[in-house]
Amino acid sequence: MRVSGAKNAVLPLMAASLLADAPVEIVGAPRLRDIATFGKLLSLMGASVERIDAGEDGREAVRIDPREIRKAEAPYDLVKTMRASVLVLGPLVARYGRARISLPGGCAIGARPIDQHLKGLELLGAKTTLSEGYVGVEAARLSGATVYFDMKTVTGTENLMMAATLAKGTTVLKNAAQEPEVCCLAQALRAMGADIEGDGTDEIVVRGVASLRGGRHDVIADRIEASTLLLAGAITGGDVTAEGADPSAMDAVLQKLSESGAEIAASPGLVRVRREGRVRSVNVETSPYPGFPTDVQAQFMAYMCLGDGFSIVRETIFENRFMHAAELRRMGAKIDISGNTAAVKGVPFLSGAPLMATDLRASASLVLAGLAAKGTTEVLRIYHLDRGYEELESKLSSLGAEIARVKE
Image (tube, rainbow, N blue to C red):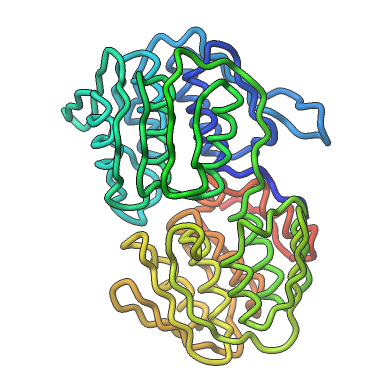
């Protein structure tokens, strides 16, 4: 199964288009609810946003023309559904000198404050205000500075990196996020004329330039979707190959799959997972990249429900990311939660049940559990799923799953 483009790489690239003085095309952008919402946000500001034929393997591209931007504001109605809307903050201030955005929403998996974003912009010389649920940021022109993030933050790193591209002087981002999506953004910004080095490490240096041009950028494969598809193969005792996946970006997940008894075969652009026999229970702790991704924790917990012993799953990124556990228990899973730790005792089988999705990755975990369960499973509120997975039911069906989207 070919893996779609990474949502978490497309969204910052869409935000980066605000910095350009000409159209930007993002090749391989999947059709997802979050990407459509971000497109509406840019359109509301005055940008032209359209889907075009990329002319490569049937892929599409999102084309954004930012030259008619009139409104540097992100309203609550759009931001409340998608936290990534905060990514427009840095580009708007850098290019237009001001921005006003509603405090962000998204999945209910934790507080996820934007204090690191605002602290960084203030160090670059911006003035920030908070009034009636909106953040206002103003700066005649940002100036380079050294910013030390108190914690690893992907969107914070991306926001400040984009803001610094048009700042006067040099900006150093310390304790920066190292995710592949950050590197994808840095590569695209360099192609647009930015002077950036150090992406992929915890220190990124950005030397400001006068302007950025448009361009055409290929988005990386979605490592979270790839992990989900491979776990679908593992949880069912199947055989799944993720085409286009970058195994080097999935080391932590592939290592845990191997420890669980799955057979892994990987080469550039290809990862295959096969499993026979009982699942071996293994412990997992989420951590910033290159550690085990929090966005795969729920799916892996579903897999561990069929383990041969006890598995300890520790969530260190978000404080409210075990909401799927209650739904898995409805299927016969044995899971005890204490703070940020889940103790999972494997059972011989799960039983199908009606389930309620609570967030994006939790919805994927319930689908995986349903694939392996005896009987029929119904997953409700799948609009969560559509935020981050492109036609997941069609992909799983083509791999042999008995799965269909039905109207409630």
